[in-house]
Length: 193
Image 1 (tube, helix red, strand yellow):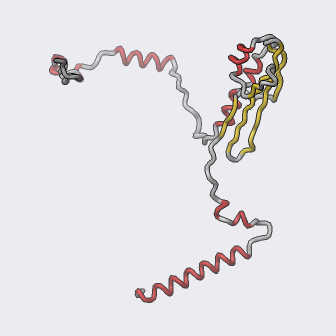
Image 2 (cartoon, rainbow, N blue to C red):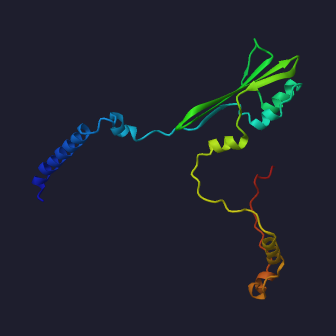
């Protein structure tokens, strides 16, 4: 095609493409919203998982006993997120998770003291450590994980390989009698005078 005929052809092609796109948007079914047809709704930015607060597992809650000291509770559950000056006998542990595509989850747990000893504790049902890890593990599963443990037969075979002498063909006389070369390096610091 000659150069002088290309620009009207391209202009006509662009006008036709715009007309087709305009016709597509005007004939969309009523049930389809305008935002679903917008290309900006197809692409969403990445949002990192946000974990805030003190995670307390159900295993930790199961170890709480009335009569524990404040120090014992702190060692078990960690430093409280909220320790009010006005409520010195109450510690609050708050834990939130925000993940992309999932509604935000919040867990609250409160412990109450009398005379510096744990009196009562109450709060939400806390997930176990394995449940928490399963919630956070959003990666694609790639299949069955191979067993990383050797059988007794495999251990015996490996021990035999290690203790077996090398065949004579792999050992050369020159290699066995040669002394290793010693590398000499310059001193790190100049001698003091």
